[in-house]
Image 1 (cartoon, rainbow, N blue to C red):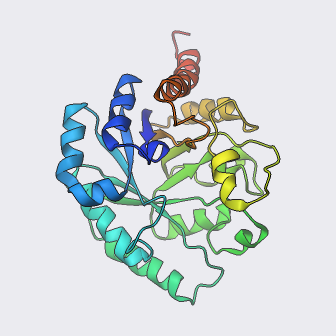
Image 2: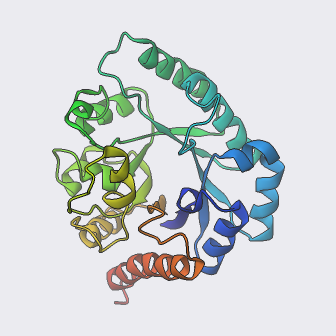
Length: 276
């Protein structure tokens, strides 16, 4: 597995810091989250950082906080695919639409964008399983893992499997993973906490419940990683951690948290090796 770090964890800091910390932690690359810095400075800036820190961009992710022009999939996806090609990245992450209907504009735009991107032989578009933040989310067309698996098979798409999102679904974590057997190209590894949030406001879930450090939640992540290894998974494993869980206001604590993430996976790999 190639270990990666989502630059979304440090979305508020210059991109060079994410590259530097990922390099220091011994990671194999980064998942680049599109943001204003990349939009303003372009692919040349990303290539410069990638070369300076000897770290490739392994995957490209849509903006965390959509800014003007970043709401329509038909506009976002072509930009992501083009940028990926320019920085030497062959995998784009795409969120599925939050719609319960296959006849509305959002669903149509999603399919149109996918069809257009599918013709590019150099960049693959992966669909990410969505999290359940509220009961209404369960009605979205592709928020059910089984329906998303069928969709990915129908359109021959790889999958970015988010463990935290999967933990909010009706399926157990390993059961959800099995639904995407052979299609997972990228794993967003993070834990899911089970505690009350005050105030109980859904936007806070991502920061304080989802995307926690491995071992600081209720998901069987060690068993999950062992399953990946037994299955011969050789794709990307991305640490996509909430800024609050990583204590992103302190670079010292970010270093410590990132080292902990790497140690979590490497130790399981070592235990699973034939020598061990």
